[in-house]
View 1 (cartoon, rainbow, N blue to C red):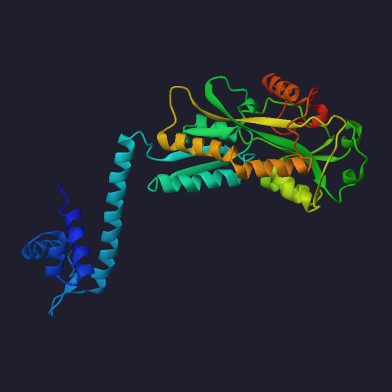
View 2: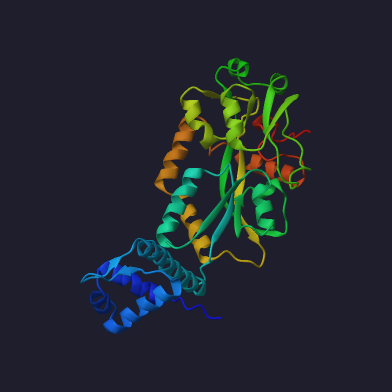
Length: 351
């Protein structure tokens, strides 16, 4: 059965409500007044309620009519959105942007690009899943997202397409009032072992077989970076954290970087990952391009210089390339966990 309610009736109802008369609505819509009146009469008949009080010279919305006008506006906007979405799909724009992002990725960069995306694709709905360890890849494999941004070496996946995006430096840190903060640098493995190490645990099975990176005899596990950071600041133990997440805390004296016996920095290579044969849509490609541009822009350069000035990253360290190769080889060999490497143990992962 065909529903007698139509979008045309909704548009006419809104036009009468906004202009204040049937004649003015007819002029706005380019219709004859009798057609406008008939459309409103039909709508009232179908709904079974009067929408206008016609006792005076001009029609006045009834209480029920005012509510129906709001509903009509939502329906009209919904139809407009549906048309725009269909046009976007025809133009190679995905109907919805869905992505999973590892929590180590800088959130300010992501928010900046997503804000720009909303200006470029104003009707585009977006779903962002922030995950840790194998979570981003699991969302991708479950079909919940079109692409994911994470260190693919952490899972060792070989059946997915991956494009390098950036590197995230990880550094060992501890609360300023923790006993380790008073140790003389360089700190040996034997000094770290008695203290609690705060590590991440995976909600998915993708990294469960990956060992290594565990140094201390006492381990506290956390499911997300934010909670672990809170416990780190509270002095529960030490851990490796993305440099950009702890730079402010180090500068403010709340955290202290631990100088280990070997000072090679660990950097995780972050990739944009998607299923083979299922390419990223135009909005997704636009977002990735914007992220790359921002990472090469003055804001990120300023942040890099700031981290360098604090001694948190050293892009010119002679051992940098060797550490990258060692870290990638260790992960591929199922030896090293996601962020539980310490510079002193980069080449000697243990369970």
